[in-house]
Image (cartoon, rainbow, N blue to C red; front, side, top):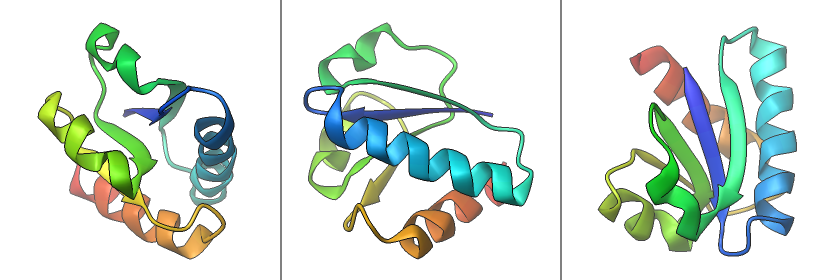
Length: 91
């Protein structure tokens, strides 16, 4: 599987989300590759199974044709692990 993590600027929160998601992926032994980018770069990506972003950006991600995982609390690992589990087990 391939996941993309985006935020408005492609730097701060997307990098933090990527680090947190990678720890969860490694802990569970999932075969998931992660990348991160700016929200406006979505159109350049293909072969992406899901996009992780902050909850307020999920509508924009879904409007671009991607499955979105919207995170409410950047510091809540349980929230992200639960969402990632649903995505990974669904594929």
